[in-house]
Length: 178
Image (cartoon, rainbow, N blue to C red; front, side):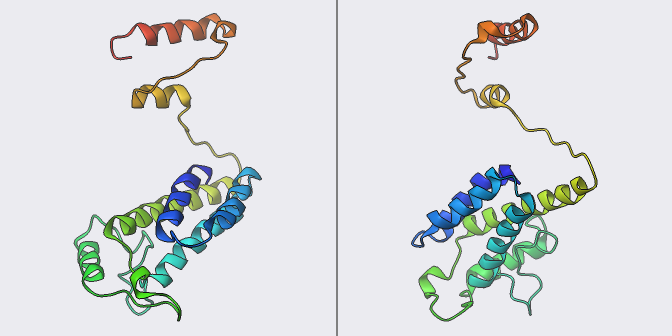
C-alpha cells in the first residue's frame, strides 16, 4: 500500500486543486508511516469512491461506468465506448454545491484514476493474502532504480561495504551500459 501513496497524493492534488488537501494528505501519509495498512487502503478506496460519485463516474444505474477495474478495463471495446460516452455527455453532480466546471475529469486524469484503482485492487488482494502469514513483494532499491533510469547515485561510505558488494558495484561501473 505504501508504494501507492505518491501516486495517490498527485491524483488528489490534480483532481481537487482548489481544496485544502494538505491536512487530508498528511493524515493519509501518517497512516503509511504508522504502517496502518488496512486504514490506508480504506482511505484510498474512499477517495476512489468519492471520484466515482463526485464526477458522475460509477452511476449505480449504469454498471459500465465505474473506476472498479473488474468492471471497467480500458483494454476492452466496452470500456472504450464508456470513455467516449463519458467525454460526450456532462457528468452528473454528486450533490448540491458541486460546480459544473469542476464536475468533469479529463481523459488522462480518469485514466490515471483507473490505473490507481487497479493498483489498489492488487494491493487489497496482497493484504488479504498477507493476513494469513508471510507475504513477499519485490521493491526496487535506489541502485536498481538509478540504473534503470540512468540517474546519478551517491554511494556514501562505499569503502565500508563488504568486498563482494564492492566487486559487484565495480562491475556495474565498468560496464559499457552503466
